[in-house]
Length: 508
Image (tube, rainbow, N blue to C red; front, side, top):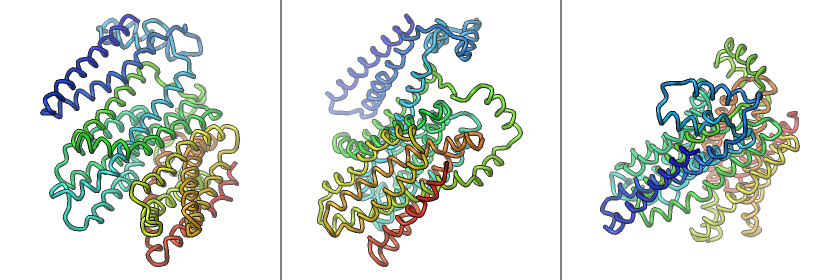
């Protein structure tokens, strides 16, 4: 505990020094923007790390025979004679020096907090660009483009989904070969580096490269984070954990455009993305410290783990992936993910056109209307997660498909008034929240039921379906909208959701 107090004192001192640096640089009219960014990063790191160290002061529960991991860690750390002061501090933070442990329920709560924060930062970085990218593309070359600005914008936004879809299988392999912890921390670090490239980019192609890198990192964040929750939470509480984690994603989606627009106006492009990169890197450091304070513990039984290890030694990753792709239940849930995101992908661009041309809504009001979907997602995700622990998860996925079909129907009925469009957007957000919370838990249950091995590959498959829906949906829906009408384009994409509903109801 005394070493932990010293750590807290050191972090507090660094925060004070960082504040003084910021004060002095601001008084000199921001002559050194990079020093300000470093100071902000140091403040964020201190604020994130200090609460994590506090957990070392609460490790007062003695070791029990059921917690072999902490006993083995304590023996290894106490018997190590070559440890220096830094390793002694690490022993104290892990609880090995004082022979104490954190309850498993608290460790699970910390895992959910960790994953929710990672998803929040991931979506925050992706959506901060929405109010900014048009200004960047319209700027003078080489940062912007002079011709075909619409094509450049389309290519910029599509690059994220394409790179995320292509990187999802590699993220699944990374989780399987190493662990979800390694994949999650590595992806957060990669996301921070990609965000920093946005600050220093000088050409449009560098911006495009950074956007693609964000998509690749996002695939690993989703795969690693969801796999970590699935491994550490048993089936009876898995849905609630998934719902809270998805709330972090919805919060980042909701706050990203607002934070990005405000920071861009006050700080400019470089300092805005330096600040965002600092937030991501601080999150990565907090993750590393949290892994030391409370390493996640698998919810699977030790006997089953020993059996699975012998089986997995004889089954290659390629063979297990083939078994995954041949499972009808897994493919049905993945198809529902594709159908849901295809509707989202076609409504998102068409809604801007419809609100502008048919209702004459201003840009600011359009942003508030679209945020209804994100707010509904934020509210529905944890509620659906709790419900998924009390009822059939496949029924909740079927419900989300029905809600998305109703959303496309109300979009076609918008001639009745603007209220129909409000209902359409709200149903879209609720359907997204219900589908994400219940389907991710259902996929983990199916992996356990059919003994398909690691969770990471099934989440990689789900991520591919997610990204593919966001790519195919706009291509098909917008093409039909140009030939016929926006209503026909949306309804044609919403019909598959209704057709998949009885398929999901058959899954036990």
